[in-house]
Length: 373
Image (cartoon, rainbow, N blue to C red; front, side, top):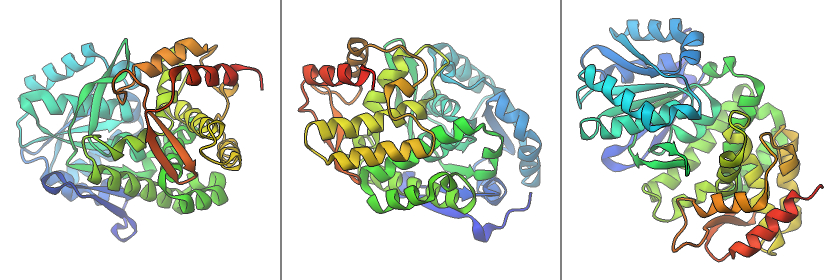
């Protein structure tokens, strides 16, 4: 397809010498082609690709590469959480070394967030660091994992507990790549967009709530992706290594990751767990009289409007039990001194970080949430 460069949106992630652009819009792949070519000085594009994404988009990807004199070298890895393992990491590192990747080259991640996380971590450690580019093919990855430099793999103890901060050199968020996604995947990605509004932009929440499902289409989607990426980029600029304010981006995730770890494998999508986590964070905030019940209900209503779960009974992968969920929350990376760190809210658009919630109280809250509504 021909890209109208004038319609593409660019968000600059300002991190000094590690700054980069996120190119957003329909035709972003073509529009960012010259920038991609500059990052491949040997005339080859080393692409770690999800075969499912490649099956939909290979011809177009190769056309863009050919226009800029690039020959693809595909390293195919099936996506999904199973990709983020020590076994897959070792295999990918070996393939990159066999390809004699050089430090001035870039490795391109083409797929969803799990492919980006794995590829970014491999790029961070192979030869003590090579460049990488994110071409996310899911909405969840476009607005969340592709931006900010968090890379990593999972362990039996939980998600993303082994990894590194390694910023990409370019992110290409082409909205036309989303056309092949099922509606469930799109909704799951939207959870990370509404999360940005709930953390620090009440006006964005109001706009998204007015749009409803239209926020998943056309210009409504382009505006929403740009707003979410810009919001995250500003947070990352302030706190790249998550020493403070960046932890706000985990709103909904402490609860959400616990459900992901406890769910029957293959039944739950990350964005669904995050959506429920957002609702739980607001209901727990209201329970503690930190925010108004009306805000918690507004979050629930919005999630229902776009088809995302707001109550545990709506979440796939159960049954769940409170003690197991709490134990998972105790393993969260943000915790300090053995105390659970939570992201809670004073209002929609006013989230904050706290380590003052007793485990016993969180457990009682989870028990109440597990009761039939």
